[in-house]
Amino acid sequence: MFARKLKVERIDAAGEAHLCPIAQIDNFAMRNFTNDAVFDDTLPAGDGLLEAGFRVPLDRLTTAMDDWFRRKGYLKPEERLRVTELTRDATPTASVSQS
Image (cartoon, rainbow, N blue to C red; front, side):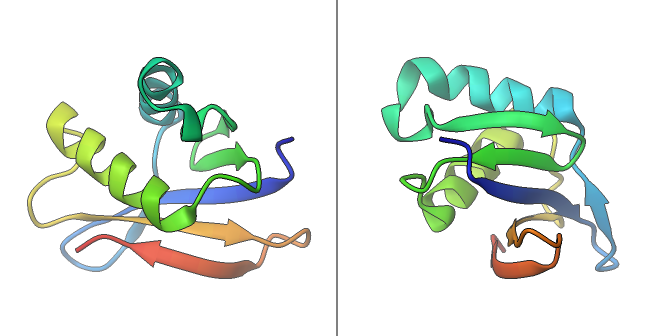
């Protein structure tokens, strides 16, 4: 079910990437377990790491996480969120960023 590994990063104003803390990812995941069934197939796995099933669309996940992180104050106006799908050898295969 959680066959995909995703990296979740906050990109600061200088363009530097920072792994999002697991507490922030977990906060998003727990909210969405009760409000949007498409994200039921997600599991926070560590700082900057989220496991997901194949039915979780990367672009929709990124948009929803960006919105939630901004409302919670985890992202500043000049920052953006980047969610990248990792291959088995941990190299990025696809990336979605919010501006």
